[in-house]
Image (tube, rainbow, N blue to C red; front, top):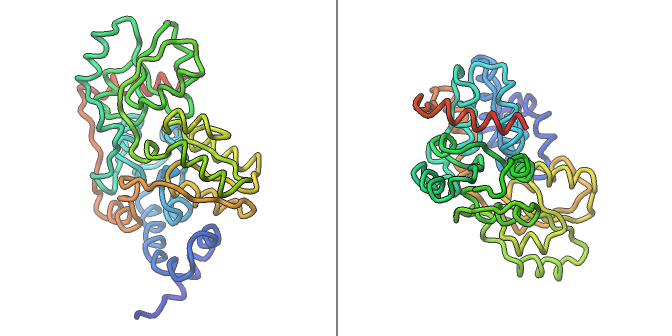
Length: 328
């Protein structure tokens, strides 16, 4: 076994302090070289790393400059003063960053980091929905391709979906592609919501029975559910909101014991900063988010791979849909 580089561990020690509750020392020792190299590459290339809340702690707390949910990343992407953006997330997030920063280099470390929701609908599907419901504006979840955004009127995230729907001066609204998000929003508005049948492969796995079993096993637990979960799961939860809203709930309400019905790394990342909260972890992994690693972030910065490009024919229309969302 190779000797540990003590200088390297010393340089990265302040970062390890952030994650020591969720990453054991021997595991951090395997991450330290890549963390150190990424920090140096960011300085050299005037680069920033934007990381979604579902990234693993060594990325989220170790090398990311901006972290958050899809809405925060979209907003912050417009303010980035850097030549290069590395998106530690999935492909639609990298496309959104590129839409909002057309002159910057945007890199996605793994081209296969996709999304079941984005894959569930095409631009042609949106055109068919418009033809069937010509009086209904199209609200596209940000978890969609650029081509789908280009066919839509406005985007939304799980954090602002209700606000976006309520801002539209129509009696009915098309919400796509997440059926469960649309159904959960429909319960909060008087507008008629027309939904697509896409589902998140992480959140669709949670059931109401899961929640009831959790309460039986942990009577004092507070249950937080992402609105991409099925409506009966949301109904059983104590709170439902975006990943950012979940984090705010934990940090302001300080529940003694909590479970987050969302992707696994979300609990780890909040737990690292909230040592007094006990996290119960019956979570589901997102295989797409987990394609992003320290090693391929480093490789992206070293080789400029993989650069995100967007067809100019659709870029302007897609950008308008995102910008309309950000203006509300």
